[in-house]
Amino acid sequence: MSKSLIWIICGVFAVYWISSWGSVGVRKPQTGLVSPQISEIFSKEKGDRKIRGVVTWKGDPPVIVPELIPPRPYLAEQLLDIPPAFVPQIHENSGGLAGVVVYLEPDPQLNEIAGSFPPLTICSEKTSLRILQIGNPSTQVGLVRQGEEVSLTAFTALQESIRFRNADFFTLKLPTSHEVVPYRMNYPGRVEVTSGSGHFWSGASIYVTRHPFYTITNQTGNFELSGIPAGRYRLIAELSSWEIHNELLDPEYQTIYHRTWAAPFRKSADIDLGNQGKDATASFTFP
Image (tube, one colour):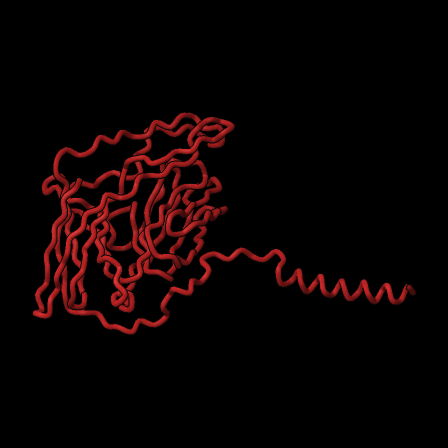
């Protein structure tokens, strides 16, 4: 075989390899890939019905002691007396529960109604994960419509990362303090947010909703859902659990590096918003 033919064959293989690498090689990571379930057009208008109600706590509040964090080899300082991630916010006088998520059970006709929630930011701090959302009294739970973005940021000098589990699954590093990183929430359901940086005691929840009929109870436990079409629905109230479900140990240092919590406490009620134009009321009591 002549040298010229060999060079021609090598050139053909080189061109093929380069073109293949360009299509399947290393690419810039993409977050929040578009899901085919997202509806770009909302074809139905809101109704004129409302549901009002209150969520209360009955009995003595649970005993939840602060975390006593031992010295950790990969943290710059010892952290003590860390407040627990999920503590029931019980109103001193009325017993109302703040921070309870109240919503209508998913229904295909509701998914086509327009509506969204105020912008949501997840902040990673030295001792906690906080959710910031206008009109939301809770810093541990938030709402976002499926297909919309949340913002993630860190308020510490250390390199942080935030972990999503349950309805969504990813871990995102936040290398620069106060830098805002967007992430699109494409998968509906409850997302458990925890630290990927060893702060096992911190946690929060995001509800990624198919429809706009979700709300969070205020400081006195009151809630209202409006713009609901006439019909029969199931109303659900969920209170974040403070009970620990699982803990993982660092195999080298034998210290806890990740924690998950039990599923939320849940109550429900059937609601009939008939054609007579009447609103409805509902009340829930925990535990």
